Length: 178
Image 1 (cartoon, rainbow, N blue to C red):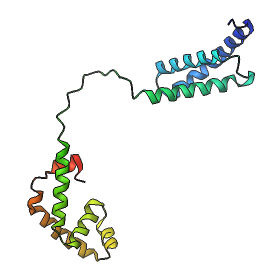
Image 2 (cartoon, one colour; image 1 turned 120 degrees about the horizontal axis):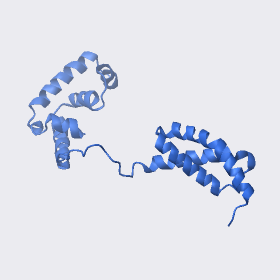
Image 3 (tube, one colour; image 1 turned 45 degrees about the vertical axis):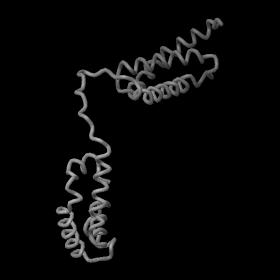
Image 4 (tube, rainbow, N blue to C red; image 1 turned 60 degrees about the vertical axis):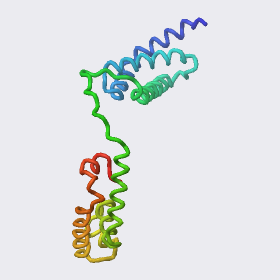
């Protein structure tokens, strides 16, 4: 379908006036001159194809909406594309066996069962729930000194527990014991 000459002249006039403004918006969105140019060009192409449907006074708003939608689409897709890098990354080290984390969790659970009810409660509140000593005391309804002494006693028992001899610090920090 051939467009009327008036529409082409009207669009050309609009494009000359709006392109610099659209480019500035695109640059602010993308933060990259090349990508801003691409967004501006795509916006103008889509605006031109819809030119007959656009109301006379709303052409810039329509174009701006296209620009923002194009940028949002690009943003969503950018994680799915390959990206060139300056250097090839080093091959990853062999990951640890996921079963090791399961064994570590079971070992910690077994060791906790060897503590008294109060010691287990203090250890779980302090180190699993990451509560402060005061928060632990409030949570358990005991004195602050009780939390400190119970925690020290429980940790001493856990350090010598044979169930934890296989759990290393690296296991608990990198994979998470829990």
